[in-house]
Image 1 (spheres, rainbow, N blue to C red):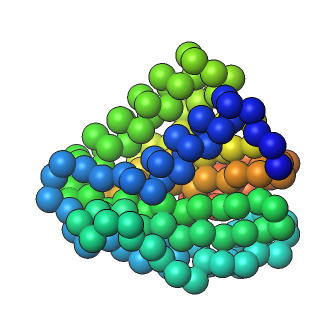
Image 2 (cartoon, one colour):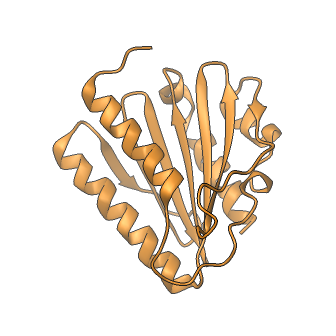
Length: 170
C-alpha cells in the first residue's frame, strides 16, 4: 500500500498520539486495554474476521496508556486506553487531543467532527485511509484508530457503537 506524504504524516501522527499519550500529572498504572474491546466486538463493527486483541502493550512504565492491536484483513485497528489520575486531568487531555486534531484540519484534508451522545465527549477524525475516534468518560480517554483502505467502508454508527462499548468498560 502506497500512501502520499499527507496521509503518511496523519498516520504517523495518529499512531504517535495513540502510542505516546501521557500527562504531566501523577499517573495510575496503565489499564489492560484489551479488556475494553473483545475481538468479537471488533468483528461486529468491522464485519470481517479479526485477529489480535489479546496483548495489551505499555511503551513506557510510567505511562498511563496501554494499547491493544487488532487486524481484520489489511485493516489495522488500535485501541488506546489512557487512565489519568482524575476526571479533570482526563478532560484536559481530551481537550488537548481535540485541539491538536482540529489544528491538523487547517493544514490537510483531515476532517474532525464532534460526536454527541458518547461518554462525556467524543470526536471523529479522518484523513484518507486513517480514521480515529476518541472518547472521554470519567478519568479515561479512549481512542480507536483504523488504518487501511477499508477504514472508510466501516459504517460510522458501528464505529460509534464500538467506542461506546469501550467507554462502557471505563
